[in-house]
Amino acid sequence: MRDLTILTSPDCEESTRIWKRLGDYANRVLALMSILKGRNPQWGTGELYDLALDYKAAADKRYQADLEATLCQKTPLPEGLLPPLTSFA
Image (cartoon, rainbow, N blue to C red; front, side, top):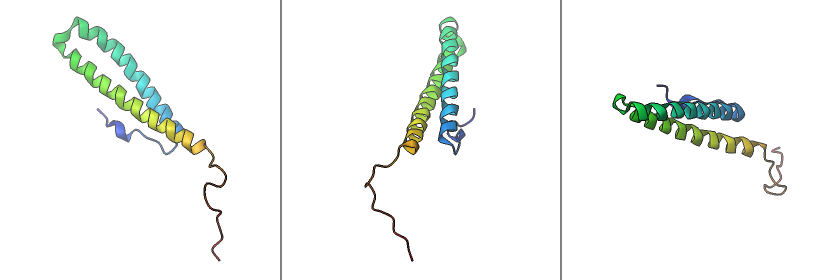
């Protein structure tokens, strides 16, 4: 499987959308695996369910981090927080 850490974009909003879609996909996989794990535990479905759960947790973590970065980029700095810039002449 692909390493989840390489799924990124320089644009935080695009990266947020990528991780959201991956989390949604993981939810669908988890729903299917929960059914199969009950029916056929001898096929290793429990382990696959656990792996999908790990992917879901990683996607949610990256989604949250990118969402916070997106919001941070859009938040203006309060007046007077930084000293005024002076020109270097």
